[in-house]
Image (cartoon, rainbow, N blue to C red):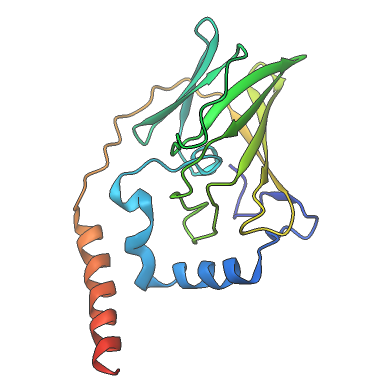
Length: 204
């Protein structure tokens, strides 16, 4: 992973093109009062593309007809490589419905049917149920590839945007990194949030 969070390659200024309301919501989520609301704090999966750029190892498998990605934070996604009927609009998933195709050596994956409940990252950037993600996994050599994802989501963003991160092969195994619901961090975050709400209600 590159240093810092400078992984946005489009727009050129490296800033997400947020709608005004989404900028305000992101600022609210970025406060300590909203840490409890991050779905990953409750052991929900991170969503796409967040799952691919948080600092965690992944394992990529290629069974016949699919690409399967295992994430060390105890989640996974499967990418179908054969055309199929799209899911009905009312079926919405945390990781979306993903269908891939090969363009030369590059795996191109288009994902739709998200449920809109995930956060884009730890600082609270917004994504909605309307997002479409087009990912490109491009090998550089036998031990590295480039991951690029373009997100189109007209509800929180004024235009599509693209991130890019390098991925490198390690001769390791995934660890069992379990997520424990109601752990000590979650209890603390809930206390901070509830205490703030009580203060606000007392002042009204």
